[in-house]
Amino acid sequence: MQNNKLYKCLIVDDETLARQLIQTHLKQFKSIEIIQSFSSAIEAKEYLKSNNVDLIFLDIQMPKLTGIDLLKSLTNPPKVIFTTAYSEFALEGYELNIIDYLLKPITFERFEKAVNKVIEILNVENSTKTTISTEVQEKSIVIKSSYQLIKIDIADILYIEALHKYIKIVTAEKNYTTLFSMNAIELEIPSNLFYRCHRSFIVNIDKVKLIDGNQAIIDKYKIPISKLNKTELITKLGKQLG
Image (tube, rainbow, N blue to C red):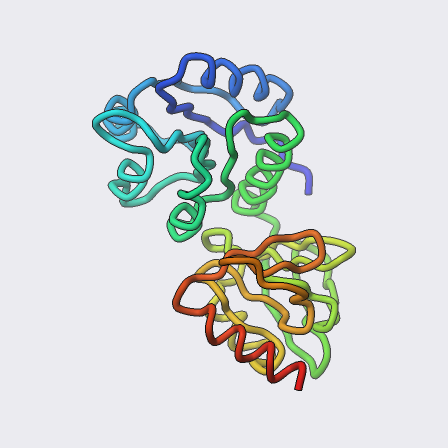
C-alpha cells in the first residue's frame, strides 16, 4: 500500500547513547519524523498532554516514572515500541498492546523489522481507500482490503496477533494486516483448531510444535502464553495428539 504520510515519532530513554542509536537508525526511514527526544518519562508525559504523536520508542526502566507507568497513564496512547535491557518485561508489554519489544543492544536488522511493522499499521489506519470486512467459508477466510479480496486457507494460518484495532494473520508464506478485532475474528474461526493463548495472540493448535516455558513455538515464531491459559492450551494439545 502506497502512503506518503510522515509519521511523528517521540524517543524516550534516559540513556544518551540509546537515544542517539535510535535517532541514527530512524534516519533510514523517510516516513518517520523525530519530533522530540526526552531523557525523562515525566517530561514526555507533559509533552503528550498538548501534543500528538504517532509513535513512541519508550524505554522501560527510568527513574521516578517508568515507561510502563507512562504508557498506562495515557488515555489514548500512540503506537509504542518498548526498548529495554530487561526481557522479563516482555509479557507485560504485550498486555499493554505495544507494537514491538526491542532488547538492547538493538541491532538494525531487528529495529528495521519493528519499524516496518508499525509503518504498515499506520499506513492501514491512515488510508482512506481501505474498507475491510471478513467472510468465512468452511475452510477459508476471505479478507477484503482496499480493492482486493484475499482468500486465506484456515489450515495455513500459523497464528493471529492483535495490533490495536487491527489483527495480523500470519501464514508460512505471508502476513496480512487487516481492520478487525480479536474478539470478532475469534468468533469466525473454528474453536477446535484455534486457541487464544494470550490477550494478543490466537494460535493454530495444529501448528504448535513445542511449549517452552510461557511460549508456544510455531515454526520460527515464539508466541507468548498467559499464565492463566497455559494449562488449557496443553490440554487442547493433548486432545489433538489423541
